[in-house]
Length: 230
Image (cartoon, rainbow, N blue to C red; front, side, top):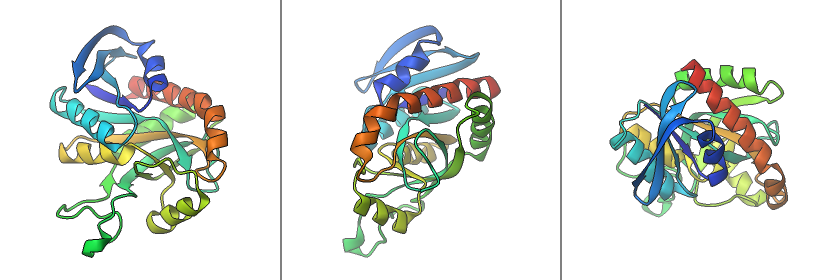
């Protein structure tokens, strides 16, 4: 069983529309859609925005559905000048940029009393995703790197610079690292896939509505092809 998490309704509706034998089950106030996607048994869920929603969804996939893999699709803001709107970022690892216990002597981003604060993604899933993207999105540039997450829509050049300087991420969003942590705690391989919808700077509020649909289309095509290749 493969778990697929999307943050927004638009992300999951396009995938649900091409699934077979769909059945909806309710857990933690969310609909979990089981069925077949491109020949693979999957569970699809819209987790909602933010790290808490994302972590709960990942825990349900790992604990109740016993998923072998968890894939998180979605959109993000670019933290690298080489990454343009519409490009794809595949996670090498993920961390929470808003985890801040510096008042107790920890570096920013470190989770106290836990061995790991940076959660490594599955290299095999990443390789599959890269091959799939090259096939179905040939006009899209693919980047591999760190995804940084926080309960914050980054739309300030100042905030962006601080995140880049501290964490060296490729993109920023609001769910991936929470899913990564839940997957790590359950020993489930995961991958975060992010289509870039904005530049995470002072233009973010302008770019986001215009490019969100295009970004989601890239992700959906990629996930469908991944199911054929896994």
